[in-house]
Image (cartoon, rainbow, N blue to C red; front, side):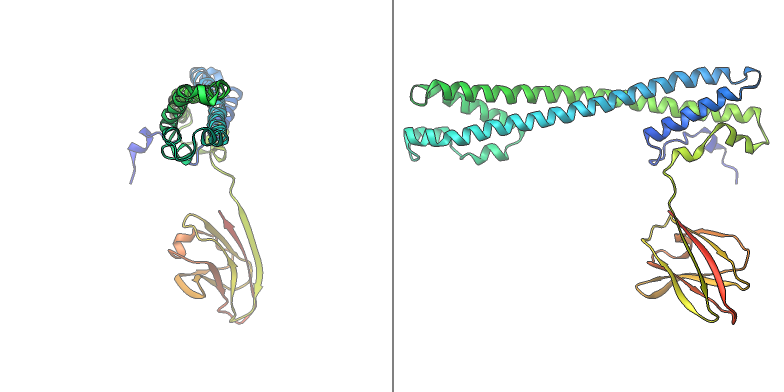
Length: 314
């Protein structure tokens, strides 16, 4: 059945198509367009693609920069918070020595102990730090000006770091939104390019490879080759694997007779049995064999020795 709706979709939204892969794909496509532009028929889409691609690359760079700044801001806030807690914990002995641990003054200063500072949220910590500074000011005649000044300075350092982080979070969110808009604009432009190029090359699907390197959109495939001989009437394990429905087996029987293949799970044969004849091309997903498995098993139903080559493609 023909699905005309498919040609109206944004086909670049798959999760495997990351921003760097989309950028590489678009850059390669643009270079190929410029190199093969008979009579300038692609001038319009070249200009449009250059514009959205430049914007996309600039926004991606900004997002990376903002994320780095935000990471630094988070670290700075944590260090400022730790410095305040460590200093207050050191000075607990001062408060205890001046007033006594059972005194009303000590209990006013540390009503819930020092651990309440360690387990508080950032907003709660900010309020607790303000209260601690207030008490340092209240008891300055007994505890000294140095204590008040240093505790106030460490509170202010945390406050500044906390505010800076909040600002950076807002800037990062804004840049991420712009990046998403730029990414969508590039995706739609690439979809338009496909349709535009197809108009001038209708009936020649091989032309697609001249303008698009589709493999750049996805991770490189990993291949594992298993090659062996199998005696007549023998059954043996080809390989073990980590099951994923989308992985594939490409099987070639290189001997004179057909071989059968099936999955096993925990030593028990499961799923569909597949007969592959010599020189026959077989390429199917793991899900074609079975919904689960941990090994591939081959059987030689013939009397003569057989052989095979199998690629596991992730």
